[in-house]
Image 1 (spheres, protein in one colour):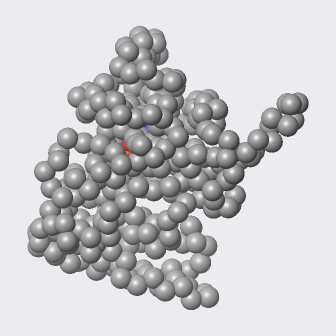
Image 2: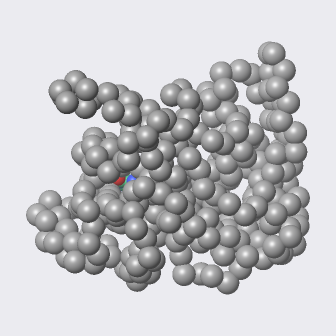
Length: 303
Ligand SMILES: Nc1nc2c(ncn2[C@@H]2O[C@H](COP(=O)(O)OP(=O)(O)OP(=O)(O)O)[C@@H](O)[C@H]2O)c(=O)[nH]1
Ligand SMILES: [Mg+2]
């Protein structure tokens, strides 16, 4: 077969992005796709659901699965849901990207590596945030230490945020994908609806606006998403667990909530290229994060 023919072989497969919270999994997905799809923040446990990001280029379709950070706090129902959302993909994918933070191997990373014992797919170790290294010569010895943790099929240092070495990573991933027809239309970028993405965008602004003040006990539900030719009407509710949390989110004279709404609206506008009317409410639902039934009602259904 000539090279030309080889080039035309169609490849397609699923690639899980896993790792402990906050190592940059969602940032990696967004920067590989070249668009903001998955929400990110400085706070751990930002991602709560699986999210597909599809990239199609040169006969190759890579279906990335962003996942919540795998963590040790197994206590509440939402924590169990998040861990399950992350670990359940491991046996259904063609490639696993295991993201760690340069030179910082901690217990939670070790716990993730132990999950690979029953994984058949090749695991690529992605050593992220290399831009943060003060001493460049710390990287090679760190990589040598990481290599012994598991028989990785490759170890690739990157900076997701600064787009360093992502093409190298993508090349490796493509080489591990099976020959297959594309599962998604070539112009599709995700399996999620704009309604889901809108809720996520609102949650991102909430998390970013509130810094360390808010515990992980808020969630966003879209009550109404109505597309009209000239404007999209979105009504959303932020659920929290206590009155105190509600007042923090609303802020003095409602200013916090207003600012969250403005930022979210701007981002939704830029995604859908239409006008947006966004109405935000805050409601208290005591104990929702540890109540399986409440969780299902709030969009945390089995994946
Ligand atoms: N300096 C630097 N920061 C990064 C890099 N990649 C991600 N970050 C930052 O790390 C923080 C966490 O990034 P996320 O992409 O939300 O991390 P995550 O692994 O998806 O986190 P969870 O969803 O909570 O598990 C954010 O503040 C990012 O801007 C990088 O390459 N360099
Ligand atoms: Mg994330």
